[in-house]
Length: 281
Image (cartoon, rainbow, N blue to C red; front, side, top):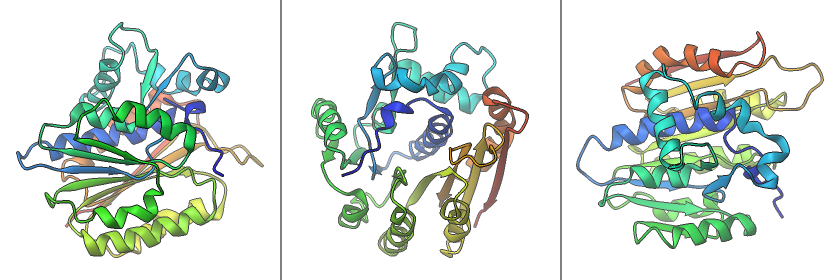
């Protein structure tokens, strides 16, 4: 039984990076009238109340999205991300953090579709309750997104984004991710795949970006955000990364211009850093 609950970490620096990149990809897909699908393999609960006992226990959002909330000088891409979060908080105060399902739903057009997978029974119940009120465009499955992804590829529209962000609480998640991507790229080679991963002092985490590059795709982008120096002997997450296969051609330029600002805004000590590398066909 999986024990990970994202509610403890909602709105933290990793969510900021993941959802900032997600919104950039969705904006790009929306530039063409043709429909697109979004498939979220590890959707979580959909949204998170920041005054819940889970979010309040660690209060990680205070070192993440909360630091951007009152800024008046946000760079355009980061402003677009914050605007989507604010749309879920109509009272003006930061009370709810939208997960990727809710953020994606806000940006769907009538012709687009969202498919969600979640295995954790408690999180799925919350996700299912929310998805049931979103119309036929959104379907949530109580299932293993790694195992079920192949059944949805390629999507009917032949345009789409697959968001993959497992908890990595199981060591085999790293290898399963690589195996799933190899199969997905055979079925849907032109799709965009956005993979989130934690920066941890373990070999699986350090090796993953190199293994993703070794998949042999012609276009990819890799961005990381570290908010503090890794503490000696610590096993905690000091940053995270997003690896995007077939990224929008505009994404590298946006990140190059805005990641220095975001790194400074979320820095927890002088060791905060970011990196950006890409190969575009």
